Image (cartoon, rainbow, N blue to C red; front, side):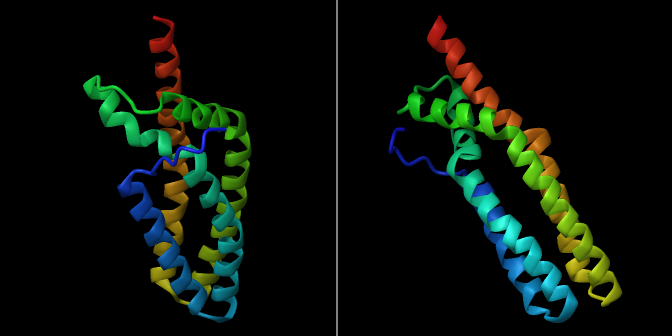
Length: 152
């Protein structure tokens, strides 16, 4: 595998950072809510690591592709998009587990009267849906587009 380091788009990196921060705040709530948030964190941290390794970096070249610009290392992008295709179902299974943990967090936070944690957990559910419906498919399409361009 190419060792070329590809960056996750700044906006997505910032969103993940904010989600980590909010999750840490939820864990700091302590009690049952904090425990439920820790369960989410235990599932989420390794998942985010995978996303930042291979699922999200291909999105950094979308603007360049839209402008018709040359890419510095299309092979590194293709490696990541092929891995994303291969691991797509596993990432979705991980989302399913994360969402189950988030649903438990929502119920617990509601019972503990912590509406800010409920809102955060609901936002994180939407984040997972956005990745499955938009971000992962867009990253895969980057690779498919690059393969088509190579074939011309």
